[in-house]
Structures are given as structure tokens and as C-alpha cells.
Image (spheres, rainbow over the protein chains, first blue to last red):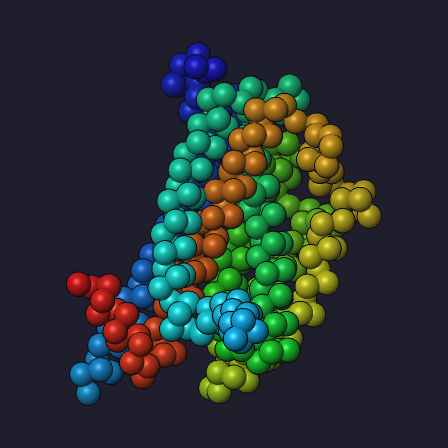
Length: 54
Length: 258
């Protein structure tokens, strides 16, 4: 391992806030997009089934 | 007789494109492609992050904060690539009048906008400890912000018409006119010597350590597959909405649920 300890890994040489903040923003964006995709699909399928029943 | 046979073969060879240009044939194919892309994105992201955080060394100048590069550069590339793809499908739709082309274009826009946000915010968080500021009106930063607004304008315009066909055409025009911004972003670090650093990756020569570059390229492919998967998912949802009355859709979904 290139890190002396896990603490050193999380600290990122004192820049942890900026590094993990960046990855956090990406994680948030990806999760938000996946949830939106899933919701849109569910409502499209629901509308389709209702349409077919009538 | 031999002649007729070869003629019919030619016909078959030419028809594959048009076959997949119809939503009925495209829908299941896109579904398979989407699954493959999600899987590749996940595997590549795991490998890329491992190399980026556990193999790539500390940067001599920037220390550890440079590790933002593994997501910042792929996001910045993807927002440009997606815009060009969006403009391509918009142009195809305008020229050929194919509905599926406009739908491709619409499916790409939200992911492109998200990539612009990720590039801007991660760049800002990287800039603070490195340049001492979250934001400057540097040429590359400003032109990327403009690209984000172009995505938002495109989506707003596409959604603002009751007649979907009018929305398709009007938004396609924004996509095309805005495409001029992409080469401006790309060449901005050469044309204006402002704050954003030049490219670390150039054909033939790179200023990065090999493992850093490897991690960044693997992450770029992960982003690429993620974006394709997300766009295909959105496209298939759009097909479900627009093809509500089509018998093929009912059959396909029934077959999939069994």
C-alpha cells in the first residue's frame, strides 16, 4: 500500500475535504441521475399499463 | 437466377440500418447494450479508482489533491463529447426527419448537463487549494459554464412546445448553433493564456506519470460507458412514452416480464 495508514489515506495530505468533496459531488450526481431514471421508467410503465387497460 | 440472388443479398445488407432505425427493432437491442454498458462502467470504475488511489504516486508539485483529476478530466471530456453527439443526432434528425434521432439527442442532454456540473464543481474544489480560488472568469471555465447553459436551454426549449415535433426542431437548432462552443472550450487553453493549466495529455507525449495516466484513461472509459448506459435508459423510457399505442411494445414488455 502506498499509504502509511488508513488515516493518511482519508487525510489526503491535508486536502481530504477537497478530494473527498469532489468524489462526493460525483457520487451525489450519479445517484440523483439513477433515481431520476428509475422514477421516469416506473411512471412511464404505469401510464402504459393504465392506457392498455382502458 | 444467380443475379436475382445477389440482388436480394444486397437488399438485405442495406436494410440492417433501417431495421434498427425503427423503435420496435431498436428497443430490445438498446436494452442489451444498456446492461453491458452498466456492467463495464462499474468494473472499469472499480479498477480505475483502485489504480488512482492505491497505485498512482503522490504528485511532486500538487501532493494528493491532484487525485481529483481521475474524475474531473473524464467529466470535462464527456460533457464536450456528449454535446457533439447531441448536435450530431440533432443534425441527423433535421436532415432525415427521423424521430429516433431527435430522441437520441434528447436522451443525451441531461447526462451532458450533469457532466458539465461535475466538471465545474470538481474543478472548483481542485482550484481552491491549488490556485487559491474557487472560481475565476478564465476562458476554459467560462466556456464550460456556457456549455452548461446551452444544455439547460436545449432541454427547456425541447420541453416548452406542446407539439413535440416543433420542440424537436427548435431544440435541434440550439444544439447545432451551440456546437461552436465545443472547439472553443477545447482550444481555450491554447488561445488564451489564463489560469486553467494546459493539457496534461497530448498525442505522443504526456506530462503525467504512467500510472496516473492509466487511472485517468480507465476512468474515462468508465464515464463513457456510464453516459451511454444512462442515455440508452432514458431513450427506452421515451420510446415507452411515445409508442404507447404500438402493439410491438406490449408484446416486448410482456415477453420481458415472463
